[in-house]
Image (cartoon, rainbow, N blue to C red; front, side, top):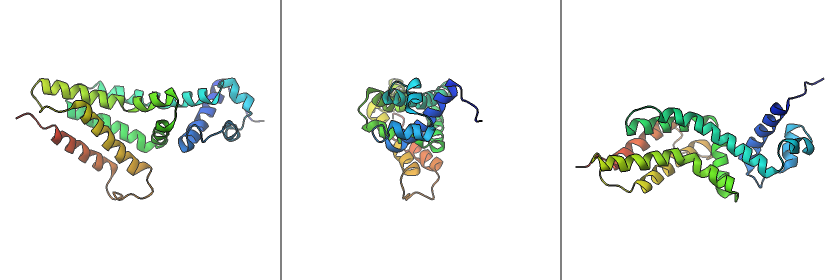
Length: 201
């Protein structure tokens, strides 16, 4: 006889399957029937843990978000210069996505979903980067260490280029940069970004 799972383990197994299915097809592309079939439980069991598909989706988003927070905060804690912290944050984030591309798929789907939880998830995925860049560029300019620059636009540009590298390496079928490791691409992006914000003359 198979061992009966505890309520906590059953909930975790439902979330695990839901993460994969939602990442592949988005919220609207997945039915409760698909989830329970994959998990091997009845809809009644699923509804004991989650009152609705919306609640399950929010639980999946929270789990992805918690993963992000656990490694970004550790990197930001290091008392080093702007470029070094930016490199460290980016390296950790990129490595995490490369090891778990479902996180990127979920992020892309979340842009298309209408729920507030989806929008919050998407915004928070990059908040550490954009806040760090924006705040520090303003501080560095105030100290006359870099030329004047639109910090908000610079943060958006950085976010967009790093996301494009990840899309290229994780999701696209054809990769015209197939011979270039993701770490080399990211290093080049950071070097170019630092040239844009060259020291004030």
